[in-house]
Length: 290
Image (cartoon, rainbow, N blue to C red; front, side, top):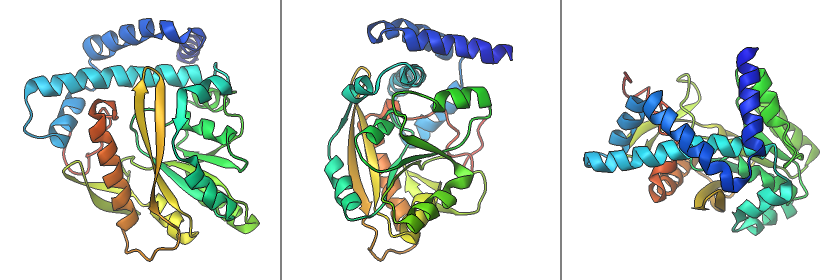
Protein backbone atom coordinates (compact mmCIF):
# COMPACT_ATOMS: atom_id res chain seq x y z
CA UNK A 1 0.00 0.00 0.00
CA UNK A 2 2.81 2.42 0.89
CA UNK A 3 4.58 1.81 -2.44
CA UNK A 4 1.30 2.43 -4.26
CA UNK A 5 0.86 5.76 -2.47
CA UNK A 6 4.45 6.80 -3.19
CA UNK A 7 4.14 5.86 -6.87
CA UNK A 8 0.82 7.66 -7.12
CA UNK A 9 2.30 10.74 -5.44
CA UNK A 10 5.19 10.98 -7.89
CA UNK A 11 2.95 10.31 -10.89
CA UNK A 12 0.72 13.19 -9.80
CA UNK A 13 3.70 15.50 -9.28
CA UNK A 14 5.09 14.64 -12.70
CA UNK A 15 1.66 14.90 -14.30
CA UNK A 16 1.17 18.41 -12.94
CA UNK A 17 4.65 19.56 -13.99
CA UNK A 18 4.55 21.83 -17.09
CA UNK A 19 6.28 20.37 -20.14
CA UNK A 20 9.11 22.97 -20.12
CA UNK A 21 10.07 21.81 -16.59
CA UNK A 22 9.94 18.06 -17.23
CA UNK A 23 13.65 18.16 -17.97
CA UNK A 24 14.30 18.49 -14.23
CA UNK A 25 12.58 15.15 -13.63
CA UNK A 26 14.21 13.60 -16.69
CA UNK A 27 17.81 14.38 -15.76
CA UNK A 28 17.28 13.49 -12.10
CA UNK A 29 15.65 10.15 -12.98
CA UNK A 30 18.30 9.50 -15.65
CA UNK A 31 21.11 9.95 -13.13
CA UNK A 32 19.54 7.67 -10.51
CA UNK A 33 18.40 5.02 -13.01
CA UNK A 34 21.68 4.72 -14.88
CA UNK A 35 24.35 5.60 -12.33
CA UNK A 36 22.93 4.93 -8.86
CA UNK A 37 20.51 2.02 -9.34
CA UNK A 38 22.37 0.86 -12.48
CA UNK A 39 19.08 -0.53 -13.76
CA UNK A 40 19.75 -3.52 -16.03
CA UNK A 41 22.96 -2.03 -17.35
CA UNK A 42 24.37 -5.45 -18.25
CA UNK A 43 21.18 -6.35 -20.13
CA UNK A 44 21.21 -3.07 -22.04
CA UNK A 45 24.85 -3.48 -23.06
CA UNK A 46 24.37 -7.13 -24.03
CA UNK A 47 21.38 -6.28 -26.23
CA UNK A 48 23.21 -3.43 -27.93
CA UNK A 49 26.21 -5.66 -28.64
CA UNK A 50 23.92 -8.30 -30.15
CA UNK A 51 21.93 -5.84 -32.27
CA UNK A 52 24.90 -3.74 -33.40
CA UNK A 53 27.92 -6.08 -33.37
CA UNK A 54 31.56 -5.05 -33.71
CA UNK A 55 31.09 -1.43 -32.69
CA UNK A 56 33.37 0.63 -30.47
CA UNK A 57 32.90 1.05 -26.74
CA UNK A 58 32.23 4.75 -27.37
CA UNK A 59 29.39 3.82 -29.73
CA UNK A 60 27.74 1.59 -27.13
CA UNK A 61 28.11 4.21 -24.41
CA UNK A 62 26.47 6.79 -26.66
CA UNK A 63 23.49 4.50 -27.27
CA UNK A 64 23.29 3.63 -23.57
CA UNK A 65 23.06 7.32 -22.69
CA UNK A 66 20.36 7.84 -25.32
CA UNK A 67 18.47 4.80 -24.07
CA UNK A 68 18.33 5.81 -20.41
CA UNK A 69 17.12 9.28 -21.34
CA UNK A 70 14.46 7.69 -23.55
CA UNK A 71 13.56 5.18 -20.84
CA UNK A 72 12.84 7.75 -18.13
CA UNK A 73 11.21 10.14 -20.62
CA UNK A 74 8.79 7.40 -21.57
CA UNK A 75 7.61 7.15 -17.96
CA UNK A 76 7.32 10.92 -17.72
CA UNK A 77 5.17 10.98 -20.84
CA UNK A 78 3.06 8.15 -19.46
CA UNK A 79 2.47 10.11 -16.26
CA UNK A 80 1.57 13.24 -18.24
CA UNK A 81 -1.02 11.27 -20.21
CA UNK A 82 -3.55 11.49 -17.38
CA UNK A 83 -3.08 15.23 -16.93
CA UNK A 84 -3.14 16.74 -20.40
CA UNK A 85 -6.13 17.47 -22.56
CA UNK A 86 -6.87 15.58 -25.74
CA UNK A 87 -6.15 18.72 -27.77
CA UNK A 88 -2.71 19.09 -26.15
CA UNK A 89 -1.83 15.47 -26.79
CA UNK A 90 -3.08 15.77 -30.37
CA UNK A 91 -0.76 18.75 -30.91
CA UNK A 92 2.21 16.63 -29.82
CA UNK A 93 1.42 13.77 -32.21
CA UNK A 94 1.41 14.11 -35.97
CA UNK A 95 -0.26 11.35 -37.98
CA UNK A 96 1.07 11.33 -41.53
CA UNK A 97 -1.34 9.12 -43.45
CA UNK A 98 -4.48 8.40 -41.43
CA UNK A 99 -6.39 8.48 -44.70
CA UNK A 100 -4.85 5.08 -45.56
CA UNK A 101 -6.58 3.62 -42.52
CA UNK A 102 -9.84 5.51 -43.05
CA UNK A 103 -10.05 4.12 -46.57
CA UNK A 104 -10.44 0.60 -45.19
CA UNK A 105 -12.78 1.73 -42.41
CA UNK A 106 -15.07 3.34 -44.96
CA UNK A 107 -15.14 0.03 -46.82
CA UNK A 108 -16.50 -1.56 -43.64
CA UNK A 109 -13.22 -3.27 -42.71
CA UNK A 110 -11.49 -3.33 -39.33
CA UNK A 111 -7.73 -2.76 -39.21
CA UNK A 112 -4.84 -3.73 -36.95
CA UNK A 113 -2.18 -1.18 -36.02
CA UNK A 114 0.97 -3.03 -34.90
CA UNK A 115 3.50 -1.28 -32.68
CA UNK A 116 6.92 -2.06 -31.27
CA UNK A 117 8.50 -0.81 -28.04
CA UNK A 118 10.13 2.03 -29.95
CA UNK A 119 9.69 5.65 -28.94
CA UNK A 120 6.24 6.33 -27.43
CA UNK A 121 3.78 3.50 -28.12
CA UNK A 122 1.07 4.88 -25.79
CA UNK A 123 0.35 8.36 -27.11
CA UNK A 124 -0.84 7.15 -30.55
CA UNK A 125 -4.08 6.19 -28.79
CA UNK A 126 -5.13 9.83 -29.28
CA UNK A 127 -6.05 8.60 -32.75
CA UNK A 128 -9.25 7.35 -31.09
CA UNK A 129 -10.43 10.96 -30.87
CA UNK A 130 -9.93 11.48 -34.61
CA UNK A 131 -11.89 8.55 -36.02
CA UNK A 132 -15.54 7.58 -35.67
CA UNK A 133 -15.03 3.90 -34.95
CA UNK A 134 -14.25 1.90 -31.80
CA UNK A 135 -10.55 1.81 -30.95
CA UNK A 136 -9.25 -1.10 -28.89
CA UNK A 137 -5.87 -1.10 -27.15
CA UNK A 138 -4.73 -4.68 -26.60
CA UNK A 139 -2.36 -4.80 -23.63
CA UNK A 140 -1.05 -6.97 -20.82
CA UNK A 141 -2.52 -5.96 -17.47
CA UNK A 142 0.05 -4.65 -15.00
CA UNK A 143 0.66 -6.71 -11.89
CA UNK A 144 -0.11 -3.68 -9.74
CA UNK A 145 -3.86 -3.22 -10.23
CA UNK A 146 -3.85 0.26 -8.66
CA UNK A 147 -1.32 1.65 -11.13
CA UNK A 148 -2.92 -0.32 -13.97
CA UNK A 149 -6.32 1.22 -13.31
CA UNK A 150 -4.90 4.67 -12.90
CA UNK A 151 -3.04 4.49 -16.21
CA UNK A 152 -6.10 3.23 -18.09
CA UNK A 153 -8.45 5.86 -16.73
CA UNK A 154 -6.90 8.83 -18.46
CA UNK A 155 -8.96 11.73 -19.75
CA UNK A 156 -7.06 12.52 -22.95
CA UNK A 157 -8.38 9.52 -24.89
CA UNK A 158 -11.65 8.50 -23.22
CA UNK A 159 -12.85 6.58 -26.28
CA UNK A 160 -10.09 3.95 -26.09
CA UNK A 161 -11.32 0.53 -25.00
CA UNK A 162 -8.60 -1.39 -23.17
CA UNK A 163 -8.59 -5.12 -23.88
CA UNK A 164 -6.62 -7.48 -21.65
CA UNK A 165 -4.55 -9.81 -23.82
CA UNK A 166 -6.44 -12.93 -22.75
CA UNK A 167 -9.73 -11.43 -23.98
CA UNK A 168 -8.45 -10.33 -27.39
CA UNK A 169 -10.18 -13.02 -29.47
CA UNK A 170 -13.56 -12.19 -27.97
CA UNK A 171 -13.35 -8.56 -29.11
CA UNK A 172 -12.23 -9.50 -32.61
CA UNK A 173 -15.19 -11.88 -32.87
CA UNK A 174 -17.52 -9.20 -31.55
CA UNK A 175 -16.41 -6.66 -34.16
CA UNK A 176 -16.72 -9.25 -36.94
CA UNK A 177 -20.15 -10.45 -35.82
CA UNK A 178 -21.55 -6.92 -35.61
CA UNK A 179 -19.77 -5.95 -38.84
CA UNK A 180 -18.50 -2.92 -36.97
CA UNK A 181 -15.33 -1.39 -38.48
CA UNK A 182 -12.84 -1.03 -35.64
CA UNK A 183 -9.19 -0.31 -34.96
CA UNK A 184 -7.14 -2.75 -32.90
CA UNK A 185 -3.85 -1.41 -31.53
CA UNK A 186 -1.38 -4.16 -30.65
CA UNK A 187 2.18 -3.95 -29.31
CA UNK A 188 3.63 -6.97 -31.06
CA UNK A 189 7.30 -7.34 -30.14
CA UNK A 190 7.15 -8.79 -26.62
CA UNK A 191 9.33 -11.78 -25.87
CA UNK A 192 7.06 -14.87 -25.90
CA UNK A 193 6.72 -16.57 -22.54
CA UNK A 194 6.21 -20.02 -24.11
CA UNK A 195 7.02 -21.83 -27.34
CA UNK A 196 3.39 -21.95 -28.43
CA UNK A 197 1.98 -19.63 -31.07
CA UNK A 198 5.33 -18.10 -32.02
CA UNK A 199 7.28 -17.61 -35.21
CA UNK A 200 11.06 -17.23 -35.50
CA UNK A 201 12.09 -14.26 -37.60
CA UNK A 202 15.24 -12.35 -38.50
CA UNK A 203 15.36 -9.25 -36.28
CA UNK A 204 18.42 -7.08 -35.61
CA UNK A 205 20.80 -9.76 -36.96
CA UNK A 206 19.36 -12.38 -34.60
CA UNK A 207 16.87 -15.22 -34.97
CA UNK A 208 14.10 -13.92 -32.74
CA UNK A 209 10.75 -15.42 -31.62
CA UNK A 210 7.66 -13.26 -32.13
CA UNK A 211 4.07 -13.78 -31.13
CA UNK A 212 1.91 -14.43 -34.19
CA UNK A 213 -1.05 -12.41 -32.91
CA UNK A 214 -1.19 -9.79 -35.65
CA UNK A 215 -0.75 -12.47 -38.30
CA UNK A 216 -3.33 -14.80 -36.78
CA UNK A 217 -6.06 -12.18 -36.37
CA UNK A 218 -5.24 -10.40 -39.63
CA UNK A 219 -5.63 -13.55 -41.75
CA UNK A 220 -8.44 -15.02 -39.65
CA UNK A 221 -10.66 -11.95 -40.05
CA UNK A 222 -9.26 -10.61 -43.34
CA UNK A 223 -8.10 -7.42 -41.65
CA UNK A 224 -5.45 -5.11 -43.08
CA UNK A 225 -2.39 -4.83 -40.85
CA UNK A 226 -0.31 -1.65 -40.58
CA UNK A 227 3.05 -1.26 -38.91
CA UNK A 228 3.04 2.01 -36.99
CA UNK A 229 6.40 3.76 -37.29
CA UNK A 230 6.87 6.34 -34.53
CA UNK A 231 9.70 8.86 -34.77
CA UNK A 232 10.66 11.39 -32.10
CA UNK A 233 10.79 14.67 -34.05
CA UNK A 234 11.58 16.96 -31.11
CA UNK A 235 11.17 17.00 -27.32
CA UNK A 236 7.85 15.30 -26.47
CA UNK A 237 6.75 15.43 -30.13
CA UNK A 238 6.15 12.38 -32.32
CA UNK A 239 5.38 11.62 -35.92
CA UNK A 240 3.46 8.45 -36.75
CA UNK A 241 3.43 6.84 -40.18
CA UNK A 242 1.37 3.76 -41.06
CA UNK A 243 2.96 1.18 -43.33
CA UNK A 244 0.67 -1.46 -44.82
CA UNK A 245 2.19 -4.94 -44.35
CA UNK A 246 -0.94 -6.97 -45.16
CA UNK A 247 -4.01 -5.85 -47.11
CA UNK A 248 -6.45 -8.38 -45.65
CA UNK A 249 -6.83 -10.44 -48.83
CA UNK A 250 -3.32 -11.36 -50.01
CA UNK A 251 -2.48 -15.06 -49.97
CA UNK A 252 0.59 -15.33 -47.75
CA UNK A 253 2.61 -18.19 -46.32
CA UNK A 254 2.87 -18.71 -42.59
CA UNK A 255 5.21 -16.23 -40.94
CA UNK A 256 5.31 -13.72 -43.80
CA UNK A 257 3.30 -11.02 -42.01
CA UNK A 258 5.27 -11.50 -38.80
CA UNK A 259 8.55 -11.19 -40.72
CA UNK A 260 7.29 -8.04 -42.45
CA UNK A 261 6.48 -6.54 -39.06
CA UNK A 262 9.91 -7.48 -37.68
CA UNK A 263 11.67 -5.99 -40.73
CA UNK A 264 9.66 -2.76 -40.56
CA UNK A 265 10.36 -2.45 -36.83
CA UNK A 266 14.06 -3.04 -37.40
CA UNK A 267 14.16 -0.25 -40.01
CA UNK A 268 12.45 2.10 -37.53
CA UNK A 269 14.81 1.17 -34.69
CA UNK A 270 17.85 1.83 -36.86
CA UNK A 271 16.60 5.38 -37.50
CA UNK A 272 16.65 6.13 -33.76
CA UNK A 273 18.54 3.23 -32.16
CA UNK A 274 18.70 4.66 -28.66
CA UNK A 275 14.92 4.84 -28.38
CA UNK A 276 14.12 1.14 -28.19
CA UNK A 277 13.41 -0.86 -25.02
CA UNK A 278 16.91 -2.33 -24.69
CA UNK A 279 16.39 -3.11 -20.98
CA UNK A 280 13.97 -5.88 -21.95
CA UNK A 281 15.43 -9.40 -22.11
CA UNK A 282 14.25 -9.69 -25.69
CA UNK A 283 16.52 -12.59 -26.63
CA UNK A 284 16.23 -14.74 -23.50
CA UNK A 285 15.29 -17.73 -25.67
CA UNK A 286 18.53 -17.30 -27.61
CA UNK A 287 21.09 -16.32 -24.97
CA UNK A 288 21.43 -16.47 -21.21
CA UNK A 289 21.41 -13.10 -19.50
CA UNK A 290 23.50 -12.68 -16.38
